[in-house]
Image (cartoon, rainbow, N blue to C red; front, side, top):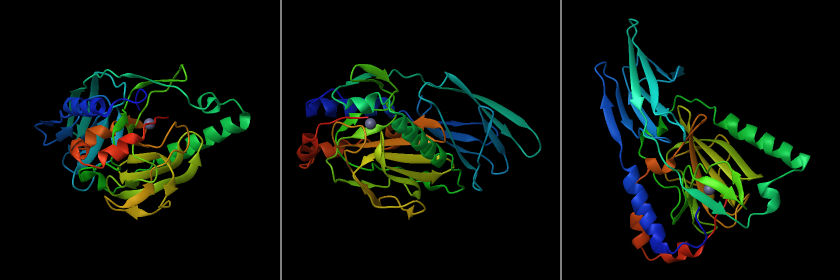
Length: 301
Ligand SMILES: [Zn+2]
């Protein structure tokens, strides 16, 4: 999402600049054979490796460890500057680790021209619909599968200028609203949406009030991708997909002012920044089809 009609060179600059800021993936290792690699920053995801027989706790919560010793931890948009990891060995030895979390500054984004009833819905029927849909989404994100589809590097689900970033403070039609938790890709309506990593479809809803056509793809261990504003769903709940499989078409459904894909990622309730998991999209901005994609300027939810 962006301020209306940014020239494409500014978008390119922003993507380049943002990707430099975000490139700082780190690796830490500890004497007890625990390794951590990823983004130790608000909205970051970290891949852990330990002995499979160890128990892992993050901020007091037990974390699933795969038979190979893989596990995931993640940090909220507003995570504190220190978080705590605890490893307990089968013999009862306890290792405590304090992790320093980089604090981010988020931009403010103003979007005008959204339908009034989508910004401040009041009708009881609409409010109960919104509540029900939130519960469906929350339920899908509770899934905790032993699958480890998340271990393969992620790819972009769609290609186009980045028109909205994770964490930005939203002011919709002049009213402060929840921050934006996805990355918006301004691809034209009908463009392909592919699976950024393998997984199982845990939600496929043709038309939610705010997010329109919505898919949740579960990558295992509580890590999921959510795709918003879709015009067409090409999968159903329970479908197993591989990385790169076509799952949907970009659309302009729900609370939007134009077509785009909003890609969100969660580790259970923790909302993380998808852009930290993929390579910058830079090469696509030097290809001829970029002009076509950049003509659709729109922004949304
Ligand atoms: Zn968005």
